Image (cartoon, rainbow, N blue to C red; front, top):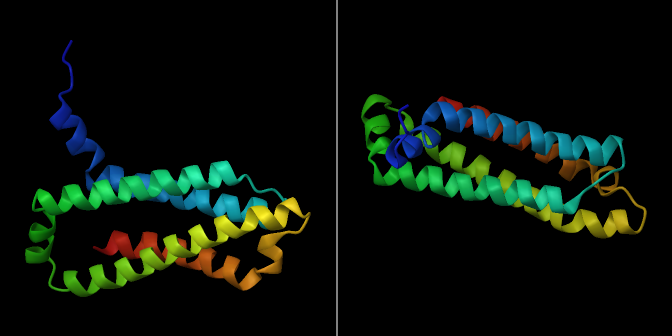
Length: 142
């Protein structure tokens, strides 16, 4: 029986394939949170914040790993529009994360009063539902 080393584990967890799967699942979960809030009138702040915390922790780790292991330089040398695509992706992703944090911070007070935050703030909810998958798609392009 062969044991997997720490280095092999890190390489797998920080690989593009694992990252794409992680971000796809994260997108599905965030959209499910908004769906449940909007249509089912349910919001679990602990679950929402746990998802955001895990997502941010993985993103920081993923990007740090990619930066310090020169993966970004390799992509830049093979993809002429990498810098522009990365800037667009970063802007969309950061906006989506900040919007999700803002919504998840405000929603519990509304739900505690028996109001549906997602229905009252439909435009913000709509932007989150649009921005989060756009962040995923733009990330797949780089």
